Length: 228
Image (cartoon, rainbow, N blue to C red; front, top):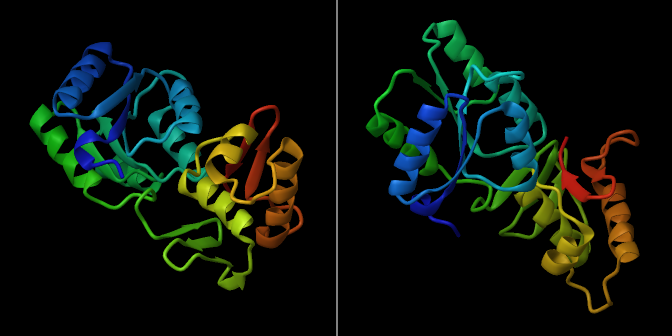
């Protein structure tokens, strides 16, 4: 498991000078940092990679940081989010936290305070280390290898459980069929595109709470992800 000191951090900040300063400071303290300057690029990265923490500017060009936060949470993102903003009004702070933010840092701020907030957020357990994950009514217990939907136990095969475990542990990431075969294919039978599709169909039939509601989402031409 990745340690807090080497955690992957995403910086979303359109002020390039501050963006560079944040990246340099975090990198010098051992964090693995990726940076973008707008919400669209941030959402794209979050759909493909896992980050333990996001430093998110509120006032971004186009979609705001608030929009990014709400959209990412709606897609099942579990990373910690630290808002960075010049807005100091209590109503703004409440709005940021209500949208899914975990903490709020008012500009201007000292780098040492930013680092203290980062350390505090990263000290919390992430879904990568949690033994129980609950998203969209589906609960997966890694310690007991059990799954329930809206509180009702669901019986899965070992293959179905392995796929669900992969998708729920990284809920904002899209996995290709090849990645699922490589990371979650546990049967002795030779894996194939059709075999994965069939396994996903069986899994959906067991965990979808309504006929028109799919929590395992197909991304055409790309793969599958878990999300409400």
